[in-house]
Amino acid sequence: MDNSPFHRGEQQAQQRMGVREEIEPWARQVIRPFLPDQHQAFFAQLPYLIVAGRDSEARPWVTMLTGMPGFVHAPNPRQLAIAAQPVAGDALATSMQPGAELGLLGIELHTRRRNRANGRVATTADGSLKLDITQSFGSCPQHIHERNWSQVERTDAPWHRYTQRCWTHRCSA
Image (cartoon, rainbow, N blue to C red; front, side, top):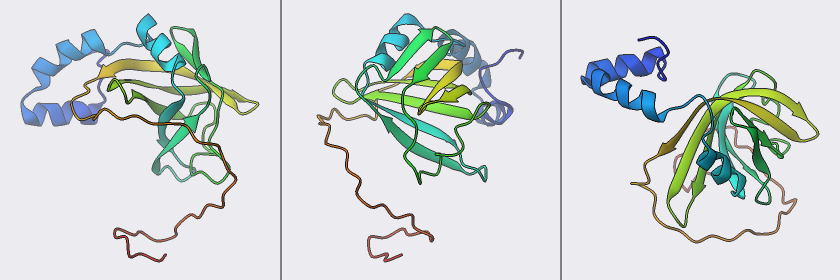
């Protein structure tokens, strides 16, 4: 199908599961190439944003960007401006360059609301970036448990990047 919101791999998986014909029409209604007003307002009131991308070696990574509510805003329905970048040493710190594909997840834990947006970095400057939106959609809150949280002071505590995979709490890597 032309202009599908799904890439070829997603389409193949849906076909194998026998759900392709029922998912595609529904997805065309809820996955938009722009941010509806409610998504623009939602992202703007968040104090943090989960960001997925690829590092300099094309490996997938996830990071968190934080700021005071309003650090993310939509100058128009097809763009998000984010007044934050990953901290130095973060796997994505050097890869959020123009053209890079990013996936965003905004979660409001106390209401279980979450919205997603995908796009490409348009510009970066002065510790911020603009993302051209290619997809925007709400996600089901089914597996999110209500949580209360509080923001803490940012510190310059030392960090460590592990050089080996560790799957237990006994790892001393």
